[in-house]
Image 1 (cartoon, rainbow, N blue to C red):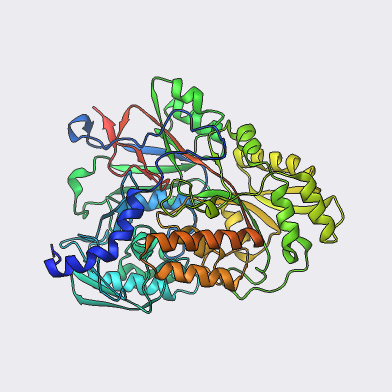
Image 2: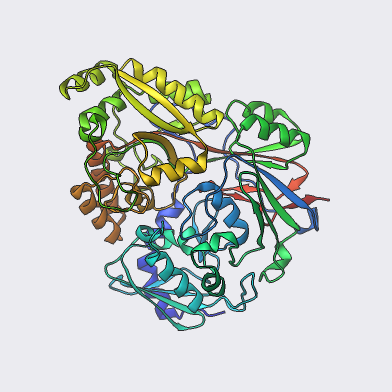
Length: 547
């Protein structure tokens, strides 16, 4: 194991201080100043399994609320793929229950040069991929360069202004930046930091997702589309003593009531995305445990204002009032009563949100939390000013899960008073992702599970050319503010800049934030070691069945 020298460590201290400040202060409650009800039941992240309380072996079945998209860290966009990756694709860095960055395949936080343009990452030694090949700096270089150059990569904007990646020795990676980039460590604690086997990449190319190979406690076994994904214990894993299960199977069950029924019957030991309609009864069941953690992300409405040829392509005009005129989009926001929405649909468990930054974040400010109040009369006035006759018909894509449909139906009834005739177009979750990328929508309801650095919750989605900017929005003033925030290691400056960005985004309103969900996961008490942190990912890799 290579350690940083004292001199290098001192150089890193100032550069990573912002990351430490961010992660130490990440949200751990659902408190809000909007008067929303607090999360019911309190926060519970789960506890790791003690080796003496679990037995070796067994197959863990997880009831999953939606099908993961491609199991390729460069291409994946969904939360659900992250559940699977957690068991088989480790990252350079991870987050702990307090959302603090901790090394995983790296051995320490990176050393950053005094000008902020050179980032040195020390790596674990003696680690092997699931195919038996060596994990080393060359593999990290291969993965990062793929993330940056693959045409469909969803990681490009996450990784920022990387110019080159060097591997001076097998245990050291040096990332060279065109300009300082404060969010890099946070990005490497997610899919951008998942290192893939160069041998598998060479063999499979863009079909890597058909048989993904990474470093992890488990390795890919099989996938049955629309049904299940299976992984099995990887004997090559460097910390194999911590792995108790033989295998994990994720079964796709989109109906929350069916997931709960499977949990109660014993057909599944874990269920993700517990419905707020079921959570009270599950908590009362002595055979089950419910974990609840605050989300770093949000749920919202994305409006297509320029995505004509697909995500990542230059925006083009769209001849629809809601796409052409910000007044129409602002009218839609005025027509939404966020608190009534979360109270009626989700029993008040989520908290209303008007922007991408949590009130508990160290980057929050009054400007970042400013919110348009529910005002149907104002909505109708703006429609009139825009020359739009009410009721104005808008088509909304939404996932066809029961909870998503209840939300859509509540929105449909709510915005009617503001002059909108909302038509609901339900589709299967993975199809929704495809349609949003292609730009085949007027508006859509979807969310983001959130990341520890606010840049990853903003720039990718609203920055010009962002890898997940499916609305096709392009606002030069926003780009300038976000670029400046990316280059700053000053917490106060970034806080001010993000407040300015939120103000500009609310004028444009191509993404209307609705609420911050709570991560709700239930599991059988026959299992020990299930954990869910604020990043929303179910951690089951080191779980085991109770003795």
